[in-house]
Amino acid sequence: MTGLEVTVGSLALRNPVMPASGTFEYHPDSPPPFDVNHLGAIVPKSLTLYPQLGNRPSRLAETPSGLINSIGIPSLGLERFLAEVLPRYEGLTAPVMVSVAGYSPQEYLTLTEKLSAVSLVAGIELNLSCPNLDQHRMPAQDVGLLRESVKSARSVTDKPLWAKLSLEVTSIVEMAQACLESGADAVTLINTFRAMAIDSQQRRVILGNGTGGLSGPAIRPMALAAVWDVSHAVDIPVIGVGGITTVDDALMFLLAGASAIQIGTASFRQPLTMVRVIEGLTGHLAKLGVASIAEIIGAGHLS
Amino acid sequence: MRGWNVEAARVIRNRHWAHDIWLMTLEAPDAVPKAQAGQFFMVVTGSGGPFLPRAMAPVRFYEQHMDIYYRVVGEGTQQMARAQAGDNLDVIGPLGTPFAVRPGPLALIGRGVGMTPLLPIAERARSQGESVRTYLSARSSPLLLELAGFQQQGAVFVHTDDQAPGELVTDRLARHLAEGWRPSVVVVSGAHRLMRAVRDLELRYGFSAWAFVEEKMACGIGWCQGCAIGPQFRLICQDGPALPLAEVVV
Ligand SMILES: Cc1cc2nc3c(=O)[nH]c(=O)nc-3n(C[C@H](O)[C@H](O)[C@H](O)COP(=O)(O)O)c2cc1C
Ligand code: FES
Image (cartoon, rainbow over all chains, first blue to last red; front, side):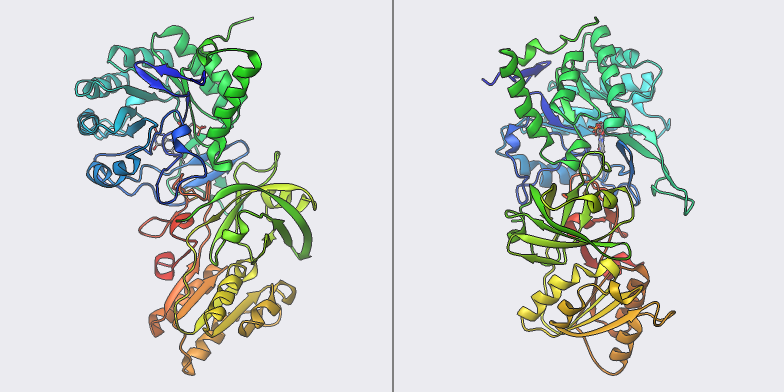
């Protein structure tokens, strides 16, 4: 026992820190310079049902305190993921939460069903910021599609099911409530914000896709408010994500009510960020003489 | 197995070289001995600097040190230019796929700071007993970086814009090819115009051509997939930074 153990719904994690989907890769042939089993969980890049290449370059634009990416979802597709990627995680003790992106509720269902059948898969995170093929809207921005997508996935798995939401909605509380009612075990808050950049000298739009998603410290206060709002209004565990870079950031999200946190963009500038935050949390507990991180979760209060 | 790490490198020297080019020597005892020709590092500029680290291809690795020429173009490199001897800068690396030197004569074509990753390759080729010809191009002669270093490895042909405007250094390579010289591998770095010229020559003479390419990188370690290039969206930081020229110039 380290005091960092948390649970997200029924899923027990050795600590509350994990990568955000799309910002961390694990390959045993070129492992990172830290033990990945020290992570609370592993969340790979979102997977689609069929193979796709992702968006055309350029895919990155830098802003003063964040990153705009238009990676899209380069994906090997379910079949090759099962055959080639999942076996890489064999032998790891950190639970693997597989992120999936579907273009229809049926695709979320198929992905969830096939993946849940694999014992290595601890659970599924639904990336709901993927445009629906018929309605050209993202489930994360359309409560009807959201319910349908989450219910479809829920109908085929008993494993932990997390719904990842966007804050670009009228009411994040309403969306989280819909996820709860549709059977999600937790909500992951939040995905990136639509953004763009233009090179004013060359009059050229920087991203090949035109627009992308903003992440990093720029979105941290908004993500924090989303975590606060949902955890105070909806009876569902929250995984907080958005700009978390330091132990202090992580503590803010836990205090606001997050049961766990994800770190994305910060890992690009400092690939050791996740393990440093874990060490920092241990140090924080020791300094306060607090036995368990559970005492910190949701302990933030109005003055 | 490729292993990278994060290391607090110490600035040994950092000085203005010529025009907008600076030269920094970093000491990184863990990372440098592992670095091979063709690899690069991500240099993390200090707080107050830009958000992302900057990809840098050292011109020389020796013992625990590496020399990095960099062009001061924006916030990140301005911040690097302010670093003083004794300061620490985090470096992530070594990164990318080392450049495997194959048998046969080698031609290297570089322009400006883009020529820097070519010197370790020239040295590697010479140590394997291959002959090397280098074609260097710059705005003016002080920017023909490490000329003496390249000359130690074989014949060097240079071109500067101020001496012969309108010409390309690849014109010399074209002449050598027309005269019958046959490199088996050609590596080009630093200017898209030179890459296009080498691509034309590649199609005509059939050597194997490689290019060092630059795209914005967020991580350098294969985590973000932001550095994709070419029709197959290969990742520069993983499959490169040297990639087959045909994939880069379409
Ligand atoms: C390069 C990049 C790729 C991403 N890819 C995905 C993805 O495939 N699926 C997903 O649900 N979120 C993806 N995200 C969003 C992150 O998981 C996260 O929600 C967001 O970046 C905010 O966290 P951060 O500020 O810590 O990065 C991506 C973010 C970045 C920067
Ligand atoms: S720069 Fe991130 S994958 Fe290449």
